[in-house]
Length: 259
Image 1 (tube, one colour):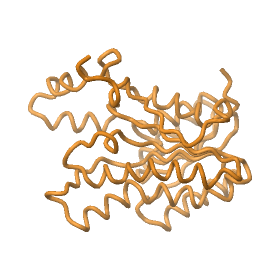
Image 2 (tube, helix red, strand yellow):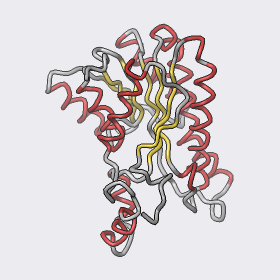
Image 3 (tube, one colour):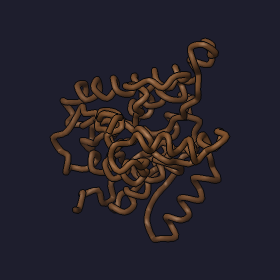
Image 4 (cartoon, one colour):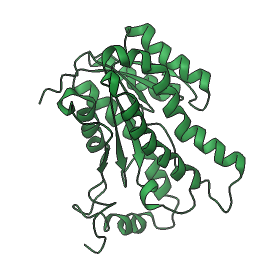
């Protein structure tokens, strides 16, 4: 299916690793032009080099997304380079383990800045261009906002905020025909997930204890599966879909775990 994304300029935060990289690759496959925002220069430059070697177009901006000015500058890079923005994928974040019991005010506020506030800032600064293009926004979220996880108050609160902003922006941006949706991720095997699994004494046993409770095929969701749904939501093939929280999780969040 041609998603009509050819030459569409799409900002992807955290687009050089994990789920973000999967989204970047899916956009490239559809002929879109991803602009990756990353704080890791070596990582993002390697991705861009590979894309250019394949004869495809992409660009990047370096930014620490907890810094408001760097968020603005990153969006400006995309506009200066291509003269337009057609879509935004807010993806960057980290499950940082800021808990109620052991966290502090400073830890909690830092978690919100690293996981929620830049979602607002990137969308805010991209909005003038999105109005022109009648673009779309996809926010990547986490099942922690629905199920809880324990020991991660900051991340869970940030993801609850992502869900709320998705619905709020979908309403606010109706006059501009800008669609806003979210993808909710549960258990997706990324480099960060791999790093977390390896903190356990028996990583394989821990992984098995998780995957056996994922109803569909008892396996982890892949970054490619998240990415495929993302590009569909960005495209005009989902032209009357807005304000939705789409769970790409093999049924993990809602289906009976006794299955």
